[in-house]
Image (cartoon, rainbow, N blue to C red; front, top):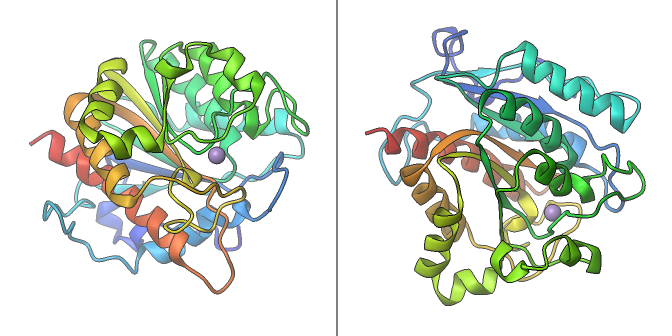
Length: 293
Ligand SMILES: [Mn+2]
């Protein structure tokens, strides 16, 4: 990342201290990406556009930044996927990003970064479940390059940490992905299900999650019309309103212990995707506070 000192919203120091409720961890890593590159620039671009946002949420009127937002220094990418995974885990532990009273939001970077974050999170919250928004199910045992640490295997790694994985927005998967969850009708919640009967889909999502929830959002869960700047866009995705309505309901019903927003791959001269990602990060904070009122 070029600007090592960029922060979310560029808040004054009294709102960025050690006691801040929100911790932003930028991870500009793209070691195992197989097609369109560019997600390493995601965190920097999201931070750069974040201070173009207004400070009041349009839906709730919550000033979401008031509990404090501390942006950590970006993680320096490691030469191998394995070293990167270890570095992420160690950084999460060192900064105690998973601890009572704190909600970490990690900015990617490719999706593989979620696995070591979950490993760290599960040490604080052993009974956590994972809510994944994604076009792809990412359940392969391994995938080149990167092997077991590939972005295409990240949710297989998640299943080693918790069996409680709820996958939303999925519309791209292999035979192997399906073999991992023969009960796929139970596991995947597709965009068509959400479009056809939103309330039923929402009941299923909240019903399957345990009380403590980690949320991972691959930007390609959104329809490419909303977020074109991703490495592997898939048509037929979720809308902004569908995703935010689901998030709001999950925050109301559960305790969200952390989140990540990954796979933003900015398109030069086109800022839609990073603006959506920045607003999404703000919404996570808004719904966190709306739920505790
Ligand atoms: Mn994906």
